[in-house]
Every structure is written in C-alpha cells, then in structure tokens.
Length: 323
Image 1 (cartoon, rainbow, N blue to C red):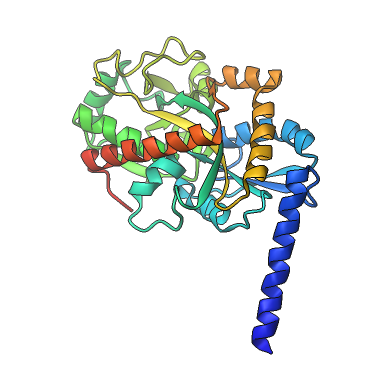
Image 2: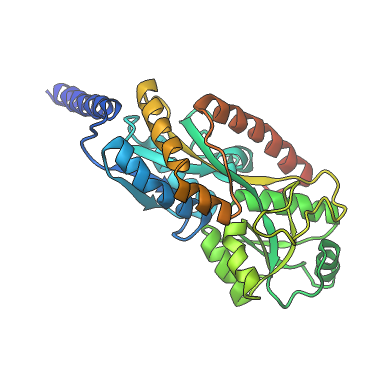
C-alpha cells in the first residue's frame, strides 16, 4: 500500500509538472516564474535580471519574480535551479563564473554546468575593472604590483565570484605577485568592502565600479578585456599596459533546468530576447558598459563549452587552489 501511495504521489507531481509545461508553452503559465539570481541584490546579474522582468512578464503572460540566492561563487542558486522541475517555471541567471569556472574550480561540485542546464540565451558580456581603494598608490598595473610586493602577503582581494578570482589569479601570476583572496557573496558586498577599505582590490564590472570611480571612492588600474570599456574609456586595458595576451571577460546568461521541453525553451528564449531588445534595456546595458548579446540556445551552449575549456587551462596554469 505504501508503494502504491508513493507511486501515486509521484504521478501527481509528474502530472502537475507536465500541466505547467504545457501551460507555459501555450502562453498561460499557472503560477509566477522564478528567476534565480546567484548573487546579492544590486550586483550586475541582479540589475540585468530586473531590467528584463517587465517585458518577459508581458510576453509570457505570467509574473517573473527575481529570487536572490547569494552565496560564495553562486553555488547555492545554481544548485537550486539544477534540482528544480524542468517545467520552465524556474530559471537562473548564470555567468562565466558559476557556469564555466566552477566546473573546474570545485573538486566536487553539487551541479554539473553542462549536464544539468539547458541554455536559453547569453545576455551580456563585459571586461572587468581592476579597482582599488584610493589609498593604493600609483596609476598603472605595474604600480599596483610594485605596491603589493611591499606588503607582507600582498594585498587583500575582495572576490565577488569565481570569474574575478580566476581573472585575478591569472593576472597576479603574470605580474609575479602574491595576493590574499577574501571571498564575498557577490559583487555588491565586494564593492562595499573596497569602498570601506576592508579590502584593497577587486575585479568588478564597469556597472559595479563606475559610480565609485567617478566619486573618487575607488581607483582603476586597468580593464581585463581586449577593448576599453565604452563607459570608462580613460581606463586602459591590461594588454595596453604590457600584460601580453590577457583578455578575460565576464558574461551573464539565462538557463533552465536540463530536460525543459524544446517548445518551452523556445518561448523563454523569445521572451528574453524581446526584453533585451527593448530600447530601455539596450540603453541601460550600454550605460552600464555591457555588450548586449541575445544569441540562440545553441550558440550559448557553444560558448559555455568553449569557456569551460578556456578557464580549465587558466586555473591549472595559474595554480589557482581548487575548492
């Protein structure tokens, strides 16, 4: 009897999931769609997600609700999404750290970045600013390295996520300096740590650092991408400063649990891309120094696979400690 009840319960759950999936595919989901953000409110992923919510709600005919699940390197939010029902009612904003870097960074990760998710679309990409507290002397990346060498243990680095950690470790290795990584639950806490002087340095997106740079609460020593940021054109790239071949970018993208039916993915992709293409979103992304993408699920999957391999090499070559 217990086995019968157990099987009946499972069938009820399955029927409910299929019903929800059919409803979303037809444009009439029965309950709000949860959009998990793996960092604290106010960070780049959170801002991007909230900008997309109004148009996605309109297109899908259901409320889209942001659910912040901050944790070190975004592991908690990604795990929740990986274990959610594949009915299109739970989505997650992953990034180059939670998807591409964590695959190698963790010896035993609670989710598989390739197997446990279906890509919907890459939202944006951007370089990161090497930003410091104003007390750090100098103006060039070599000045920063020279100052770090005068400090026992180097400088304290506020780590907002694994992309910043990998990018930083690769940079310090090329500069021949040692630093002390201090992990925070996302970009916003890392920003506050640098502004308050609790940390010396962080690698932050233009969105996270621009206001603080303009008010003098931070200093910029370079940008990690091959091109300068359009919102911070006076900040030189690290390549320009002699860091040969250094080009690391932070990207954000929307994913669903693996097994989400193709018609549902197609509808979610359509809603996300329509949201990305609205004038307000395009303008805000540009103001934040984000390059808008909005590619297909297949194109996004190719980027995920490429960057998992790329960051695996960086992590191994830099000697970045695995967790």
